[in-house]
Image 1 (cartoon, helix red, strand yellow):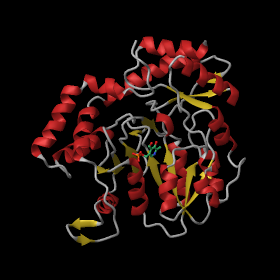
Image 2 (cartoon, protein in one colour):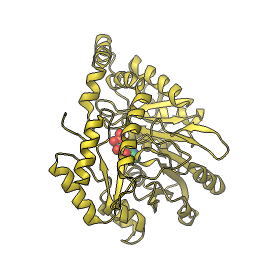
Image 3 (cartoon, helix red, strand yellow):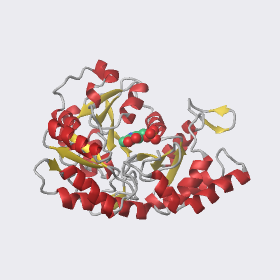
Image 4 (spheres, helix red, strand yellow):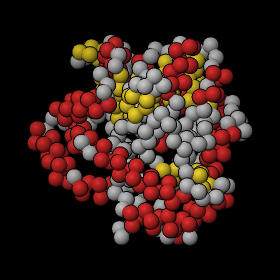
Length: 373
Ligand SMILES: Cc1ncc(COP(=O)(O)O)c(C=O)c1O
């Protein structure tokens, strides 16, 4: 049995080595390294895949969020709503641009935002809700869009962890994660479900004006070379990465199925375990399992589980060990311990098992045996 990793990128590469190597060689042969043909090809293919009118490629998922925020021309004192149990990117970008993050708590079952807490966080300054699809399944987008419409707010979907997931609204319309709100963002960080071999990101929108503006912001604020229409940044998807992503996009359905198969294995083994709670599913969303995250019945049980796994050379990770409202960088926004009890409890009890496309049944059984020893 091969050694077990949280994410096994090398084994995945070996299956598609011929295609990936040829794609890289193709870029080098043309030597059009910046905004080469592969960037457009991949963006067009991804747009088809997620059924978005526009895909704007950029340098990473954090830039995608920054470009999205910047395109909205928010007032200087704007507030945005974001879950505290989350990766830092949306909070960091919003705060960096001078806006105030207003945190909300999450649901203990699905780990996504608790939509029943959003309205009480809205003030006259609130302009944006960042809907994060954590660990691979969609937040409750029906409710988020309903609240946004009622209060006239923008919604940005942070889809870095759920590319390829779908969400079916109460009215029966199924859409890909990242295309439900007017703007969706994603990341192609190597460990993501659609990952490149470096950094990469993209923005999805069906809105022509927003698309043009976001393309312009990502390109130094210029539509015409050396003519600067607005303040922008330099955020490009690297051509080599685009060529690699175009190969991997063809396998995304297969990759998702492999992750779902591994998750089903874990579910079956752990569903009735007194010390661990398996991830609850949002019935309106598919789950593409960027992470398979369990909750231990107590912080001590988590520590014990992680130690048992490590003793058997099985890695595990804690996503996330501390909620964002208690991080030093965001302390000046005035939040305290106890403000978001679910987020705080999750940070002290969750842990993620290895999850990637190459896990064999033998490895999965070994992981479970190591955990339940
Ligand atoms: C939810 C979420 N948003 C945004 C990002 C940022 O993506 P990147 O690392 O490509 O900047 C990540 C990456 O881990 C993420 O998990």
